[in-house]
Length: 242
Image (tube, rainbow, N blue to C red):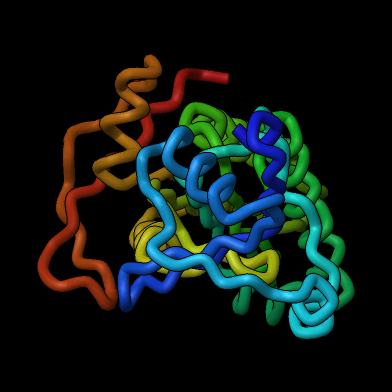
């Protein structure tokens, strides 16, 4: 539609409180702006305000072109949290130097699985990671690969074994400044807190989507999650032998 009417969209904003959308675009005439909206999705702007491009750049800074529509991805994500069992007591037991070596081994297992499953590490939490996946199947594959990696890891004599718990939830988190926020993130974090070391717990939505992709789970359980009213239904991922 842009090419047909000579319109170039530069940016857009949502005002959720007032239910309004603002588009910043370049167009030969106001009529072209009306036409491109009408033909693209049927909604037309209720007001068109002419602004100086110089003033826009002075106010907003450089504006990048929107991503090509063929590269755009859904806002739906599966969020995964991992947590190293007893990290504080482990630090006290082995000392800081040895702990950092163990943490490096821990990170290597996590990131190897993350890269293989096409996940994105959102942040390192000190004794775990928060990761984001576009595909729920990739998230479940990653979680299983992480647990398989720790099962296969052979610690040196006298070194404690490393065990992690994993929790995940799916939804539309808020992505801002390379971090993620919102109820989906909170749910994934609390599910991780409720998981046992060496196990993977998932939300009901992840379970439902995972079943359709061929994954298996144990029977539903109810767990009381901090910050959530009432019990929450969760499922444990049933891993096949590695």
